[in-house]
Figure 1: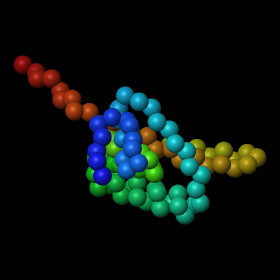
Figure 2: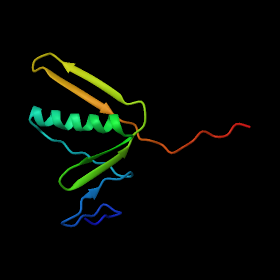
Figure 3: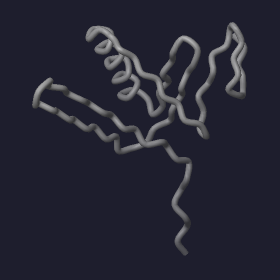
Figure 4: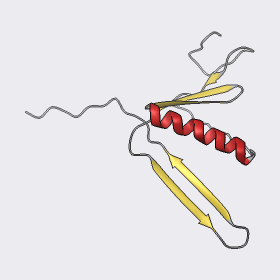
Length: 100
C-alpha cells in the first residue's frame, strides 16, 4: 500500500486523520463488538504512548499524554443510560526552559 502525506485517498489508500482537522465517526454495535473494540483500545493504552484507530477508509494515529480522564455518567430516570467517556490529551514535544 502506498502512503500519502495529505488527506486524499485512492482505491488502495486510507485517509490519515491528522492534526489541524476535526473528525467524528459514530458506530452502533453489538455489545460484544463494542467490548472487543474496548479491549483492543485498552491494550494499546497499556502498552504504548500512541494508538491508532482505523475504519474502512481512514486511520487515526494519536500520540497521547497523561493524565487520561475517565468520566462515568449514569442517567437512571425513565430509560436508564450509562455513558463512559475517555479523554486522552495529546502528547507534547515541549521541554521545560533552562533555569540559570
